[in-house]
Length: 433
Image (cartoon, rainbow, N blue to C red; front, top):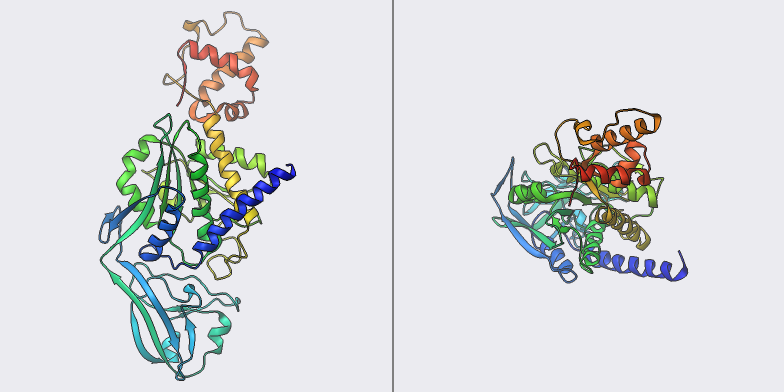
């Protein structure tokens, strides 16, 4: 990479990082004004369409909860000193805490405090979305320093009948077949595990909109889990019909690693595109199993949903020490980290856009002889060609591009092309959209 390209890369990364900085202070959750404020800021860059799903809506086995908003929260000692203060860090409050305004002894307060043993300076991220509760999160040092006293506890929150919000941007392509990009926007001040995904998705959307595309792109910004379920409940029929590949965007901003988490199927266009991109750009990437899933791939790849969704990440969620703590801050995410995540996803998307996909047009093994494709006299050369032909037909299921097909059957692309043309001419092989 020459100096000019390197400077452009860093400038691009700095622009993404500036957006992370702007979004970082907002107290987001799976519903409420923090979520909407985040989407409105993203809407300044891409034309998001906002949607609301009312509280009480049944989405498969789940129900959309009440809407949660918070203005302030603190715990003060008998001198009036705030020993815990939401205004200093919004992770200090357990997400979805019910409103509280009481005076209680330390022994009672202890029942509502959360800290991490062995992490003296980290505030943990804790939520209670689906069971009414309240609490504070503190560093272990702060927890140990609390004195036997009476504490005034105030949580200025509200739970009300409202809605969850999600944003959607659809970029039409020449084909109605779609590539889905999904990212979640529901965590408070966590930089890698939350903000890196929406920011990279926003910049990918801007790039995708620059020129006409082969496929249609559906880009959604949702609250994790409940948002994915709500979106699927509304759009499952459409998604199953049109989505040919999908990516869940999360943890894309640090400089430590590149990671791949497959779909449950493990052999979709998205899987092959992700492996191509990471093998090309970062061959030392970490390959995980679907057994390691913990984000919205759980919903998209669930039995009966079966969407071809994978994750390309930097350090995978749950594997870095700062995960779900206040240490996942603006020092963990970097311009080069964000650009690396963006570049890996863009390369995977370009692979899908440019590749040619084939599927066989008959069920079972076709009869080659009646089409003049099986020789009367077999030689070593014809046996190799017939084997390649049969393997192409066996592996051409629409998931592998021609390069992946070549790797699977161990025949070069140059050798495959004339065989593919013969199979197409005889109506045994068709190009997918």
